[in-house]
Length: 103
Image 1 (tube, rainbow, N blue to C red):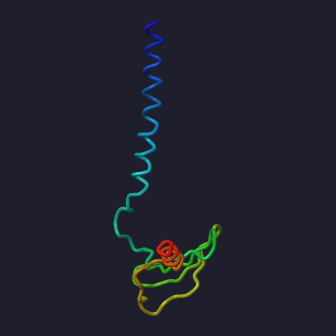
Image 2: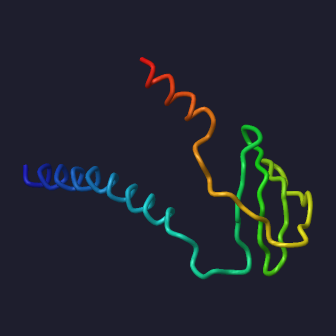
Image 3: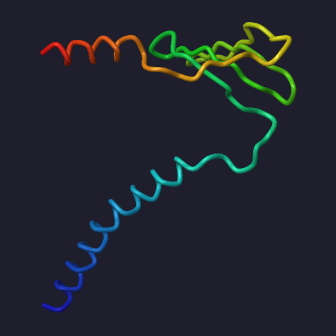
């Protein structure tokens, strides 16, 4: 009888540990990469379900790259640092807010 209770306790412990481990993995994956490094993404925009265009700073060079599921291609090299705008509300969010206000 005591071995069954012990086995059941271990089973409950394992089941309780699964959500904790998943939470820990999620937290670790959200941490920023260590160090500044020579590569950073300054801005990006989605142009399809699996395609993006990004402005990337590589040391002192600025590159515009196209990113797909299978490749990354340089589209242009910028002569100077781009003037990036602060991200505002997307047009759909504005339209949705107006519709909510009118109802």
